[in-house]
Structure formats: structure tokens, C-alpha cells
Image 1 (tube, rainbow, N blue to C red):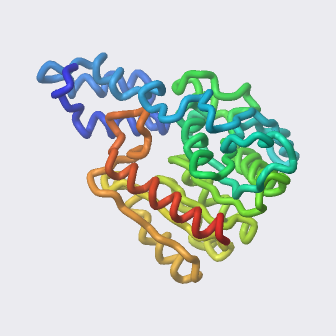
Image 2: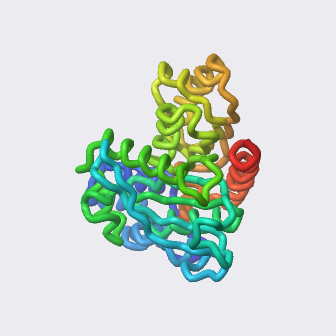
Amino acid sequence: MTSQQKIPAQAVDLYTRFIHGEVDRRGFLSGLRKYAVGGLTTAAMAEALMPNYALGQQIARDDERITATYETVPSPNGNGHIRGYLVRPFSADSRSETSAQLPGIIVIHENRGLNPHTEDIARRFALENFMAFAPDTLTSVGGYPNDDFRGGLLFRDIDRGAMLEDLIAAARWLKARPDCTGNIGATGFCFGGSMSNMLAVRLGSDLQAAAPFYGGAPDAGDVSSIRAAMLIHHGELDARLVQAYPEYETALSRNNVTFEGHIYSNSVHGFFNDATPERYNRQSAELAWTRTIDWFNEHVRNA
């Protein structure tokens, strides 16, 4: 596939349905065949649609400006425990309990587990002077298997209620750390966006802000429990979620929740993910990131 050839939007949508489990791998590949015209091959389209984590990495794992560790958090109401990736901006005493306190951000992955892209986002938050914790909801089945397809299969076998309890445990653990100010926010993508909304419902005033990216909304009746300031991101071409958003907006307004909602033009589901270049929209992603950092500075750092 040459740099001038553009994968049809219908093929990108098929990939989105594939990663959500709406079509299986065979259906995905067979569905791509109908778009294999004008020099595009099924194999080339499949390769272009799959994540390229090296391409999407903005901050190296060994970047000297950060300190990163893997931590395991007890989750007695969930799957027993959850492992995650903890990142802070580097300082000489960053591993001691006397290090400078920072506001915390929970970063929740898509529905394939804690892949390299999500870890990279956690590092980006560290360079914005937050401490970030990216939990892996696949912990109970061995963790992210270094393969998104396998991760997606494992993901389907875990009880969603237990996953949410694991994420609540991770958020409370981050909030209680001596190197955290006690103010925390949550963000996430797709599944992680939905879970960010649910953390806002379940944590109430213990969560200062959330910035869900293309996540499903909570039930309208649960919105009354939200105390966090909500910043909601959707892509204009993500039809199902865009059509559902006005009901959420109405519920947020009715319950006097501080919120902003943004619909990004010419952007599909996954527009923020620079590891999937056929979905990535640089202009929308950069604007959404700036808005998210500003939101967390206002409502988490300065809360």
C-alpha cells in the first residue's frame, strides 16, 4: 500500500467492530475483501489497521525525565488484586515517601488490556507533572499478553463488575499514597472511557475530575451520584456514541454536574490512538489532549 492510498472509512469502521468483538477475526478479514480495490489488498489493509506501538510511542520507557514501576494493588471486592504501571516525573527522591506530592491520574486502557500505548499515555501525564497509574484489568488472567487480539479474547472472559471493583481499588490506592496530594482524576479510552464514567458514579466526591474518551455513558439515573468535573470527548463519525451523548448531557445538566462535551469533526472512534494511524486524527487528538491537561490542572491539581 502506497502512502497515497487511503483505506476506506467503511474498512476502518469494520476494524472498530472487530476490536469490540462484534465480528470475529474471520469476519473482519473477509469483510475487508470487498474494499480491496484500486491496488489495495486485504493483507495490506489489515496490517495498516492493526496497532503499531513503536510508531505511536512518544516517550521512551527509559526516558530520564520519569520514574516508572509496576505495582500490585489489593482488590478484595474484585479479582483479588490488580497490577498496574505507576509513573512519576523524575526527582532525586522520587522513590521516597518524602518526595513532593502530586495529583494523581488513573489511565484506563481500551478493551485489550494494558498495552504499550496506554503505558505511553501514562508517561505523557508524568511529563505534565502528574503521577499516573495505568491498571491492567487482565491481571486476573495473567495480564496483557503482548498481543491485542489475544488480549481482546481474554478480556471477554472477565466479569465486568469485578473489573470495575479492581479499578475502584486502584483509584483509592492512588488517592491514599503518601506521594499523592489526595486529588485524583480518571481518563480512559473506549472501555476505559466507560469505566472513567463509572468511576465518577461510584467514587462520588473522592474523584475530582474525569475525561472519558469515546466511552459509553452511565445510566441516566446514576448521574446524580457524580461529583467530579466531567470532560467528555467523542469523534463526530462515531455514530452510536454521538447519538447517545445528548441523553448524558441532559442528565449532567439536570444534576448540576460541572462538565464540557466536545464532538471532534472528521474523527472516528479511537481518534486519539496514534498507534492506530488509520483511526488517528492528529488535530483532534492534540486539541483533546490540551483540553484534558487544562481540565485536570483546573479540577484536580487546583481543586
